[in-house]
Length: 464
Image (cartoon, rainbow, N blue to C red; front, side, top):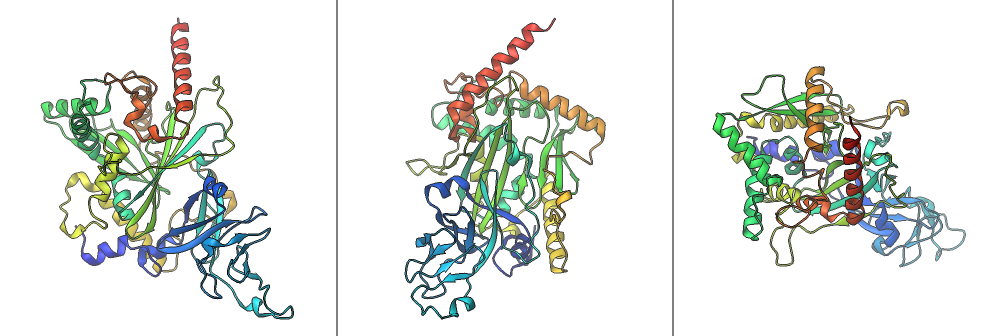
């Protein structure tokens, strides 16, 4: 458990807080790019600060303070001009650096505008998201992320606004054990309450619990392990009665809060980032960033824009939506309370990855307090190569075995994520079991899955 002071230090992200100052050394997603096509001026909130994001008519992005420094008119109602955003009250015009370019009601000879500025932060676009940097100069480079640059894939962005602190979301990244009961028994119970539970052996909920029953029959239990690397860490899990070199590896973490659940192993169509952005102390914007990579023989339509959809956490009756994997994750995060009281928790040996992440977070906060750069701050363009998940640190033979097993598991008949397009025994397609069901281009994704499946079968039949 943590002390109250430690819990405060690790969770609070506002200006001047230890974790807030750490977070201000990083670039953060603040809005989907497509939202600026609907409305080029938007209110945003990040790290406890209210700001206004805009794209002017010249195509330039700006992120400035929420109120005009003249008479406090909210700039959410500002008018984008060829350069900058104009306050609708008296016409003061501000560019993306915070400079006041015009005060059109002042005498032509006035130089007062040159002495007025508004808060302004750096913004850039990458992968269908607008990113912002709120920290001190010199400004680091925006790290390149592999999935954000995969022009040949089909990308989708699904968002959820969660009523809880960011650390609850991030700690789940290290908690591999939760998948057994949260995505097994709770999944079964949610479907049972809806009258939809079946004995489908390929349903994740049944397969997961079948594995756990077998584990209990043998008297085994899951063991977890963490391995650090320069970007963050990876984790592994194996049964206690399995050989010591046989691990299920995955979930590379890019500090501070991005994870690649697929683990970077080959064989998947679906690749994804999970990003838990700290909006403020009690709000997290969770981004499910999907990239679907199909065999080269399949023609994937070129995307002019990467679509975004924001999904509620409750249904029309006010009930939590629990019949898909991420919905189960999320209820475990926000039902801990707005900020988990970690003075009351009781951790055990299965929580070693959570403990290790907290230690890493403390270490990076301390580095910033000592005036240094925390991890994943990039200042040399030559070093800013696209981040691809790495299992660095694990023995080569373990990586090879885990990669081979993971590839077979994802492409096998029991992999519901490889069979999104197929219909389960319950009568719904397997895509319904995951957050992918909300993707704006869902029908296109399913059609491409079907085509990939036919191609795989043709290849199998052609083998001697």
